[in-house]
Every structure is written in structure tokens, then in C-alpha cells.
Amino acid sequence: MKIVILAAGFGSRLWPLSTSGKPKQFQPLLNGESLLQYTYKHLLDIVPAEDLYIVTLDGLQTFIYEQIPGVSSDHIFLVPERRNTFAHTLYSLNTLATDEPVLFKSVDHYLPDPDAFRESLLAAINRYDAKSSAITMLCTEVEGYYPNYGYMAVDDAGHILQFVEKPSREVFDELQKKAHVYRNPLIFMGNKDAFLRTLRNIQTPWARVGEQLLLAADDNERRRIFPEVPIQDLAPLFETSKDLMADVIEYEFLDVGKYDALYELNEKDKNGNVVIGKAIVDDDCRGNFIVNQLSEPLVVLGTQDSVVVQTANGSLAAPLAKANSIGDIYKQQIL
Image 1 (cartoon, rainbow, N blue to C red):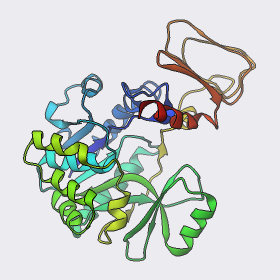
Image 2 (cartoon, rainbow, N blue to C red; image 1 turned 180 degrees about the horizontal axis):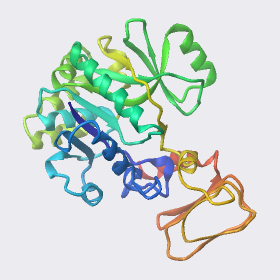
Image 3 (tube, helix red, strand yellow; image 1 turned 60 degrees about the vertical axis):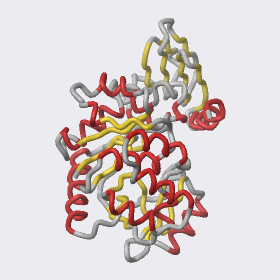
């Protein structure tokens, strides 16, 4: 099975570390390793390099060549602009021009147990080969309610009924009353024909333009159609078609899209601070995430459980629990 890494987002919740010019997937956020390098490395345990591809925004390919030495240009798919997962998936399938099944994976995850990830993903791939070629979204068991997770509701037959992103506790409890609820790690698989059949059974304008993109004759036609595809994820596709399936896999992952997640994953000093770059940190500072990307030192005094980031793109100082809301402000500035 071929695998495509979805690496075209801009990680707005991690501004000013993540920007549209160098988004989070190319930043050294995991103890000096980028999310792209980390994801690519672990997927090489599942498929050889010749079956591993990356989709990103045109203009950002320089980071891929720098971070993945030896990667071939025909293994990098360059979308003309960001349109979210729906358009990026169809663009990649058309570029691949293969009837083989393709697995798509988000670039955003840290794996506490890489061996469990590899074994569970290989098992899911083998199960997919043994059954019909329906598009299948992989999911994981839910262990309690977490407000920042994405979830999916699945019926007894394994069909996906609904996606819910960051629900309230009340919405989550109601969802559990009517369906099986799983966590959504954004890993899915299917071949070109499966996506085409699904789109043709959906009577909406976005399905028609998606079908056109999937069947584009060449790169010029792909790029002409691409801006017409609506900015949306895969939820409308899975919720509109009742033929799409869920498959439960057994592994843990941490979404590396927020400052509190980065704090947990990086090495800490004696006072529990994560310090990256030149910084003078007072002994009264406890449990902070501190980053300085400028040549001048950053001085931090008497803070606790905070994010302090200084870069050429801007600065951020906020309580750790509140820092993720910077994404909404950042999106207002660039969209």
C-alpha cells in the first residue's frame, strides 16, 4: 500500500513558532526533530521509501528536501493553495494515478509506543486488503472525555455516522447514547475508484467539483480545478455517504498541535521548564514553555505554567492553558 503524509496545514495554534511561511510540520518541535521527519521515519517501518509520498503547499518543498535527504521530487505533491483535507486527498490521488489502495496520514502525531503503532497499522492494512475496497477511516478507542479531541460516531455495522470536533461534555455524552464513539486520528485509506464511486453517489456541488479534480487529465487541469474545491475536511464525505467504514486500531497518539502538548513532549530543566534558544530564566519560574529564536537573550522572571515565545514573526506570552486560542487570532490576520 502507498502512503501519503498530509503536510499542507499551517498550525495556527502554534503561532509564532508556526507560520504560513514555515508551518509546524517543518519546525524542530520534538527535541530538535520536525514533525515531518518524525512521521516519515516511523512510516518507513511500514512501507519502503518508494511507496511513501508527501503532500504540501507549493513553495514549501525546500523544507522537505532539507529534512528528508534523498527524497525524489515525484514523491512530493504540491497543492497550489491550502484547501484542507478533502481537496488535498483528491489532488494526491489524481497525481498518483494508481488503482492501488492509498493510506493517508496526518503529520501531527507523537507516538508514545511506535511499535504498537506499526503493528496496529499493518494489521489494519492487511484487513483492508482482505475485504471490500470501501474507503475506511481508522479510529482508536476512547478512554474518557477530553474536550480538545476529535471524535467519530459509528453504528453497529461499522458505518460512520458523524464527526464531532472538540465537543462539549454534553454533546459527547449524547453521542455515546446513540452510537459507538471513537477518537479520530485522521488516518484513512481507499483507492481512486472507491473515492470516485463515493463522490458519484453524493448529489452536492462539492462532490461534482471533487469528481472533476479526481479525474483531471494532467497537472494543468488539476491546478485549474483545485481552487474551485471548497475548503473542507473529510467530514461531509463520510457523513453524506453511508458506504464508508470505520476500523478500530489499537495505539496511543498525542496531537502535537498545541503548546501544552509541546510542553509535555520536550525535555525539562530542574524547575519543570522547557527552554529552547537563548533564555535567562529566573529560579522562581516553574512549569513554563519558553522559546527564543532571536540572537538576543530572552529574560523570563517569576512566571508559572505559561508560554513565552519570541521570534521574528512576533511574540506570545500567555497562560499555558490559554495559549492555544492564539490560533483564532492568527487566522483572522492571514485568511
